[in-house]
Length: 608
Image (cartoon, rainbow, N blue to C red; front, side, top):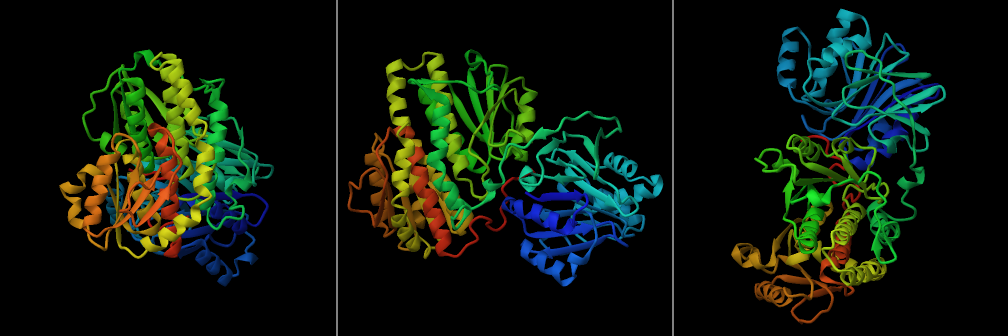
């Protein structure tokens, strides 16, 4: 979601802040701003829209001449208040001395705002964040110390927040605070950074300190002191950054999304090499210690694309493991009665590891004494703290807001974990496992075959762009792929796409079908094939523009067809997801959409 960067050192701060914010653009945002401190007064510069607009504001104000060496920056994804300059961060106190940026949600901001207004404080925005800046400013009047003011003000705040705070009277320091929102400190000689995501610091520092919940750091250019919110010193070790700066380079691709789709065969080979050896699944995850013999039921909790990956896992695992598996949207899990116990396994999936709904769901599962497994692409993220077992996706940094390679990495992970459990519990014979692995290991090459024909998919996308809506249909293993295809298309092309079980088409959605409604059918030649073709014929009879994706074009009813290599039905989602990703990409490209940063979306949704 929103992004934070802070800098204190000997270099020109505006350039440092803008470089860091540039690396956070992939998270999604709709306004940006920076504040500079060590001059005659704190100066704040803000702009609606992208960083290019903020850069223009800085040029207009000759900011390159500003001697400041301490400052904070922010890109905002609007929650409370529209994406305007007034609502953009940083926010500054009425006396102009205290300034801050904030990620998260202040839940009790309305009552605090009313109280502060009664005290004569004037508000300029509609945000929840502005409450914090005025609260800390009022506390500063009492204590005359930024650290003491922040600590006192925090006691009044409810919700989730990461703050980076400065005061004009204390130009030698910044205060960083974390509660239920990620925040890290980047450490260098004679300069230090604060950031909400490690990508902001790539190429700038080699070591970082990860703040935990209810911790605050006093950050100076030559020191970092971490304390809890009560003022007690907390000893923290810095950790080496193991990411490379070139991971956030397009490497010749027009968009990060296309680059990340193309990386998928490489990622699968990497994961297979790690976990499949000599016709056996190898467990080399040092944080996977589930007692599988104890597990009587499994519940996946996830959001968005991760939810669709869980749906695939449900279908595969119930076939292989003979264990009841259910899938719950994390946002719904939180507010319902969950009949779980010590024999239950709850699996939380989050690409970013910062998804607020999923984290809250896992906190609740902890109280039910369940075993908890987390699957994430970021082993340095918040969600890891709420799990006894963790599996990393090994997908690498994903920059495009629309998830592609992380989705495929989730699928691959659930396949190898499912096979591992089946192998160890003797739920599948060795011959069955060998047969499955033979098909499994062909998947990277088969995806490369699909990618080699992407120009055909681009031509079909040029036709889809002319329609305001679309419907995806499928059955069995690829019903989740249909949901994912519809999500991808609506995310980046803004076409109103929806997905349905093919058998449900005639139970309502068929009313939508005419010559203005394309129908994309995902066809697997299994026991559902004949019925699915029948459903396609129903759509064609209503003059729908009919697109098929599958192994063979065995019917002449399709207006367009995308062929996929043959594999076992259970593995078909690994192949089917690639054409729907490309279809969404090329449709968005044909419509000239902002593919990597679609409107209103964020890579990491850190609020419930």
